[in-house]
Length: 80
Image (cartoon, rainbow, N blue to C red; front, side, top):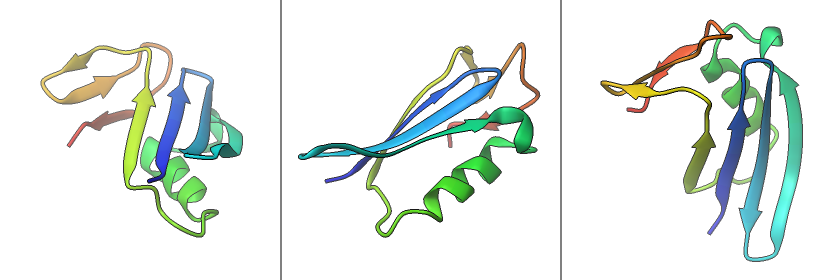
């Protein structure tokens, strides 16, 4: 099983893939280089040979009614 890990802040977002052998595909992006979360996620996923089956996302924002919005980043998205 592969798990996509992501740590997102207002300025940077980091991705990695974790499996039984450890972490790989560790990358760092600047949030300002992408208009939305979906675009940076698609960019990262396009670099992988196999898509992870699970996703863990750490964000510095409250989840209100399924939506995440950031104080210092214009990105907004829903959990669903």
